[in-house]
Structure formats: structure tokens, C-alpha cells
Amino acid sequence: MFEDVESFYAMCKKQLIYMARYPINFITSFAIVFIIILMVILATTLFIGKEETNYSFNAIAIYGMILFMFLSDTLWTIGYNIRWEQVQGTLEALYLTPASKFASLISRVTISIVWTGLNCIAAVIFVYYVFGALPFKNLIFSTIVLILTLSGTFGFGFCFAAFTLYLKESANLAANVLQFVFMILCAMFFPFSVLPDSVLKISKLIPLSYGVDLFRSSLMGYPEGFPELLPVNQEFLIILLFGIITPALGYLLYRKAEKKVRTDGSLGMY
Amino acid sequence: MTEFTLRSNLDAMYTVFLARVRILSRYRGWFLMDIILPIFLAAMPILLGRAVAGTSMEGNFLKNVGTANYVAYMVIGANLFMVVSNSLWHFGFWLRNEMQMGTLESLYLAPVNKIIILGGVAMYTTLRSLISFFLAFTLGCFIFRVNPFQGDIGIAFLFLLVGLIPVYGLSFLYGSLVLKLKEAEALINIGQWVIGFLMGIFFPVTVFPRILRFIAEIFPPTWMNNGVRSALLGLNYFLGEWYLDLAVLWAFCIIMPLAGYYVFISIEKSIKKNEGVGKF
Image: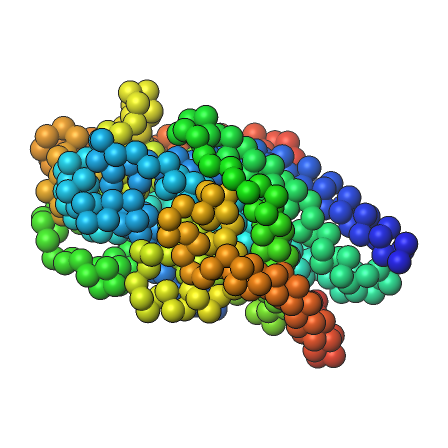
């Protein structure tokens, strides 16, 4: 156990050193968030008449964006990092060490999740001061929903990492496609009510949609019509199961994929 | 002694082009992504707009932008953004990939002028961008039920073609940054969003404050974007007439590639003198 914690710490440190060597990455990730927010809000203002102001739409877009950033981060950092180790030729070497595979996976996302968290806080402060007050209600409950949803997205990340071992170079493409598919299907920048019925049916099959819905509805203090998909307790139950089952399932899938590529001898191949 | 003729230079350019096409043919999903991505990008403001304004969205959009056809406006913006963004990605990543694969130095040792190699990459990027633009635009029009045959298609096409030339000048500038700073991913990521913001993919640049608007207006993709939208949707050109806006783009066609190539060569020279182009 202690060895696992130690190897996790060492891997996190290695990730941090690697990130610190590319400082422009740090700066640009902050800047991109502000630019995207500005673009979304400027685009929204074109549809609003001069006399209308409705801050809840800023809240919908910003709170959705927070989950989008975490999802995107999880997909890229867990899955694509595995790919990067393949490209660098260090993946097989890593597997020859007796270090915990789970720690190896988690360490990839820990540093960047902290960084994304800081980005999100900065984004919320930016919108709060530039575009006006954002509702911050039910903070404790919203945080629990966020943590459970994040845990679920970790599961997605593990599944994607498993997928990466098979897909190789196409993993990059798959991560890109997936993040945009989830962005639309999980209505991350707009309410579910604007989705066409056929798309909404698919959205309701994705547990992450309930995470998005409940997270922003609770932060907005459940205005009329929110949450949009199901009552609060039912949505919470789905998110709870999503947060517990998906990481376990994802990790199981990853171990299976890993075993398969090790048996095939294609672990380091790219 | 090797003799460099026009034919041998064109052959070299074609070979670079062919190499890129072959790599693309091995990763066909990349091309698919070029076609799908603008649809997702356009969907975001369209759905957000519907949520914000409901039934009055067309009227509000007409009042704020000058056309009620918000769907076509967003589809055009998203597609042109992809054209510009792709030129940066393709060029920046070509350089970065060559660095990482360790083939950039060998490429520099080849007995061929750099402009020929860059020309081959630009040729590949142009063809890929244009094909994906037309496919993505057609698919976007089909999905969002927009009539693609509206307005002055010829003028719009002219703006697109002429607008691509300064965009490749920009990608040379970008390439020099990648050579110098190495971090292509970060640079391209930030660059594409800054460009999307400045060219106004989801809104007219007239919403910007004066200084930001000035910056946007000295930026060639803004003129291309506005030109294509004005031609297809009957919006106002920046200078009132299409030929005046096009004349500005022609001026960019001279300035940008020259400036881009000059900066690229200067930075490349300084890097060759110091750490070498292969270091990453």
C-alpha cells in the first residue's frame, strides 16, 4: 500500500516536471478558457433583444463549460497520455517496473485536474466580474454532484485509455470526436429543452447528461423547469451509480485491454 | 552536378504534397474530423441562441447582425474557422512532427529550396482545406436545412480563394513560432481560438470595442469571413463594396506571405546557428 502511494507520488511529480518544462501550455490553457467564454457570451448576446437580460443563460453556459473542461481533460490526459508513452517508447519500460498500474493511470490526471480546477475558478470569477452575478446556490450539494460526475468521467477516461491501446494513432481523433459529441448530447452550453426530440432521447441514455443537468440546476437554485430531465432525487441516484460503477468498469476494461495487448505483444507498438 | 530546373522543383513540391496525402490516407479519420467538427461548432451557438431567445431569435438576430438567417451565418463562420484553423494545425504539426520523428534535419540537408518544401505542404493544406470546406458546408447546410445556393456564390468563392493566400502567410509566421518555442500544441490551440475570436466566427466584429475591432481588421481572415458572409447573406461589406474589400484582401496576399516567409527564414537561420532545427 505504502509503495503504491509512493509510486503515485513519484508519477505525479514526473507529470508536474513534464508540464513545467512546457510553460506556454500552462499560460495558453488559461487564455483559451477566457476566449471561449467571451465567444459564447458574445454569440448569445446577438440573440437577445436590447431590453432583455437573463443571467441564467450565462450560468448555464459557464457551469456546463466547467464540466466540459473536466471531461475533455480526462479524455485527453488519461487516454492520450498512454498514447504518448507509446510514441516515446516508454510504455513497455513502464510496464516492466513493479509500480501500480492504477497509480500510473490516476497520476496522469491528478495534476491536470488540479490545473483545470484552477482554470474553472478563474473562469467563474472572470464571468462574475465582467458579465454580472452568477448564482451560487447549494454549494455543498453541487460540489458532491461535481465530484461524483468527475468520478464518472474518470471512468470514461479509463475506458478511453483501454480504447487507445487498440486504436493507437486514431485515439487522438476519437478523443476529439467524443468531446464534441458529449458537448452536444449532454447539452453542456445550453439547456436540454432546445435539443430536438430524437437527440434528447439519446441524451437521456448518457448518465453524464444527468450530471450536467443536476450540477447547474442546483447551482442556479432550481429555477422553474430545472432540472430538466428528471426530479432531483432520481438524477442524484443516477449520478451516484455513475460515479461508483463507471470508474470500476472503466478500470476493468483497461486491465482487459492491457492484458490483450501484452499477450499480443503490441503494447509498445504504434 | 545536380541541375535545379523548374521541372525538378515542381517534382520536389509534388513529392512533398504526395507524402502528406499518403499519410492522410493512412489516417482517414482526420479528414472525417475536418468535416464533422464545423457542424458541432455551428450547433453550439445555434442551440444556445434558441434557448436564449426562443421564437424571437430571428428578429433579434436581424436587429443585431443584419440578417435573420442565423443558421447560415453560424455555419459559414464555423466552416471558415476550420479552414483557417486547419492551415495552422497542418503546417504547425507538420513541422513539429518532423522534429519529433527526427526527420526535420534530414529534410534540411536535402538539395532543395525550403520554399519548395513549404510550397508542397501549403499545396496539400489548400487542397485538404478546400475539399473539407465544401463537404462540411454541404453537410452543414443539409443538417441545418440551409439553402447553400443563395447570394453571390461566385463572389463568396473569390473571397475564399483569395483569403487563403494570406492565411498561408500566417501559417509561415506560426511555423516560425513552432520552430522557436517548440510547443506546437499549445501555440496552435491558443492561436486557433484567438483567430476564431478575431475573425468573428459567431458574431460580427462590429460588436468589439474600437481597439479590438482595429486588431481584428488588420487580420486577413476577418476580411475573408466577412466577405463570404456578405456575399452569401447580403450583409454589409466593411468598405461598402465587395471589390473594395477584395482589394484589401489582395493587399494582404502580398504582405502576409512575404512577411511570413521572411520571419520563418530569419528564425530558422538563428536556430540553425544555435541549437539546430532538430531539437525538441
